[in-house]
Amino acid sequence: MVNLDYTGTRDGEAFDGGSAEGTDLELGSGRMIPGFEDGIVGLAAGDEKTLELTFPEDYHSEELQGAAVQFAVKVNDVKELVLAPLDEELFKLYGVEEGGEDQFRKEVAENMTRELKNAVTSRVKQQVMDAVVEAHKGLEVPRALISQEIQALRKQMFQQFGGAAPEGLDLDSLLPDDMFRDNAERRVKLGLVLSEMISKFELKADPAKVRETIEELAATYQDAEEVINWYYGNPEQLSSVESKVLEDSVVDKLLEAAELTDEPCSYQEAIAQAQSQR
Image (tube, rainbow, N blue to C red):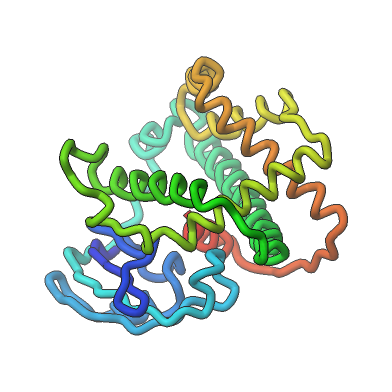
């Protein structure tokens, strides 16, 4: 396990989602793009290195597909992972109070199945969204909407590095528009097209599907019922789930008319691909 800082740049400019501080990376997880893990093998705490890499042609972010980039990496710490013994202390740590090892293995298997389903669904959805954007690449979108989305992405990135922006801090100069423009335009374009499709197909957020989605999200917490009540008691969060359900409904509609090809992969590969899309 390696703890590191990294900053990704393309043609000397930082790109959205390409930097992190104090992040843990398990070597062999496949979470980063090809060549990243190989490039840091053998480094020790305190070492720094610049990696010259290329994003895969099928990378989920269209603007980075096939892009040549540089990652400035600093290793903070290196640790060896040691498997914990299968005992009552471990079971309780994961919320298994009764049933011992059998119940623990059952719950782990259920969690892995759920994660795999979500990973595959996420991958297919991303491929559909990429195809939608590609089919509408000539669509002109209002500049005002792009500007609004840039502001939202800028605030989101800043909050990931320490919370709300302090008063008086000029985020526009710290995080310039060009860092977010491509992603913002893509998101706006995708939102407009999806909205049109939702209207065309006369889709509604099925309450039963909304409930099922919330229950799946809540299943990862110890007190699932409390999480479910929280979603239904929070209009903003509930609206977010309803939007996801509508997006998934659009994807289902488009897949009905698509020619699908199965692509075999391991559990680890599926999870790593899903994590790289976050």
